[in-house]
Image 1: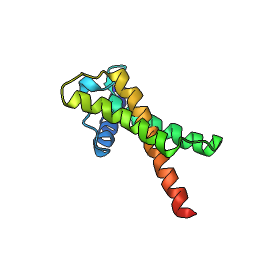
Image 2: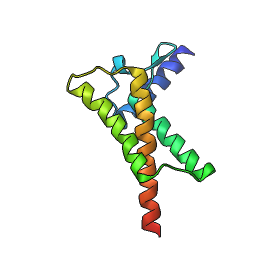
Image 3: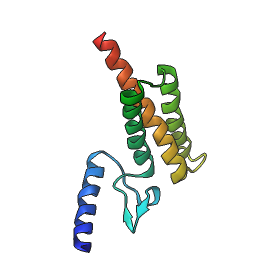
Image 4: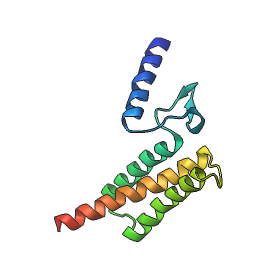
Length: 118
């Protein structure tokens, strides 16, 4: 059983790397001793993209382009202030800003697609 779990973890980590995540352990969540295949921010981005897809499909609602850019800007700002050394982020903030960024990014894609199709 543990060998299967280890193999599944190796495969998921390879997928995380394929998606371009740095997979730093200090910036990742762990479940039962296994590091998630993507960091906290990427986890948030994927979750936010999923929320955007679900809200567009089932609720027929999405953010305006302006609010989508603001949401992505919040994620960028969190990354930027950490990058320049002004303020170290934490995994909770990375997750939340990732959700905002992922939701905003997917919404922008949908808005562009709607404009192209019209």
